[in-house]
Amino acid sequence: MAQEGPGPNDTTLNLRIDAKLKAEFSAAVGDRPVAEVLRSLMRDYVEITRKLEFAAEARRQSQLVASTEDEAEMIRWIEEINSKGGER
Image (cartoon, rainbow, N blue to C red; front, top):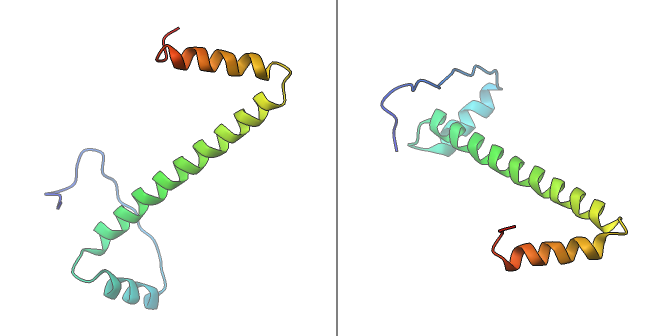
């Protein structure tokens, strides 16, 4: 989906890259505009990073809960909340 012009939240990113890399990348993207492919890659990278950060935080919290004496009580509470559809 092509954009008609810059939006109100658009900004410019300038970067220096090796000329050979630029030529190879341009050839690799074919008929698609290089900027469009780079935006797509950036969005994908941000999404992957968010998912990895979420997983790391979930793992940290899981390990924190598992290391407490109240783990069984916490599991019962989670199951109770879950059985109510998230309502308290």
